[in-house]
Image 1 (cartoon, helix red, strand yellow):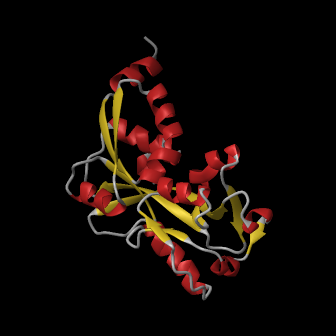
Image 2 (cartoon, helix red, strand yellow):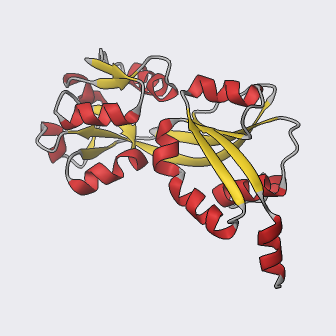
Length: 219
C-alpha cells in the first residue's frame, strides 16, 4: 500500500463542528467535500447554532471546533482566522438600488431596511457601520438567520446588508440583486475556534489545514 493511502487510512475518527448557519450552509460545504475526499475514514458532524451557543459548545468541550463571524477574544478559546467575506447591499431586482453597481452607505438610509436580530454579530457590525456613517435606519423586520433575511428581500419588503458568499446563488438565479458598498471596512472576518489546551487529533489538524491552507502549528 502506498504511503499516501496508508496515511489516509490511518486518519480517522469523528470531528464535531458547531457553526452559525451562514458559514455552515454557504462557506463550509466545498471544504468538507474536499476533506472527506482526502480522508474518507473521518466522520464530520455539523451542528447549526446561534453564535453565542457556538462559544458555549467550545467552552463546554461538547464540540471540537466552532465556526463564527466577527470572533470575540476569550481567554479559554483559540481563534484561527478562516477567511473574510465582503458585505454587500442586497435588494429585489426591481428595486431602484438594483440599477447601481456601487453605492455609498449613506444612501441606504432612505430605504426600508431588513436586519438580523440585535444579538447577531453581523447585525452589530452593520449597526456600527450605520453609526460611523451617521445613518438612522430602524429595521422594518429582524430575523435570526440569513435565509429568512434573503426571503424578505426577495418579496421586496426592504433592502439588507449581507455577506456576498451567502447570496451568490440568488444573484445567479436573478431573485436578488447585489450592490457593492463604496469604501473600506465592509468585510466580515470568519474564524475557527477551539478550546485552548485541547489536544488535536491528526484528523482535526488535517481539517484545519483543509480550511486554512496552513498546518495547525503554523497558524
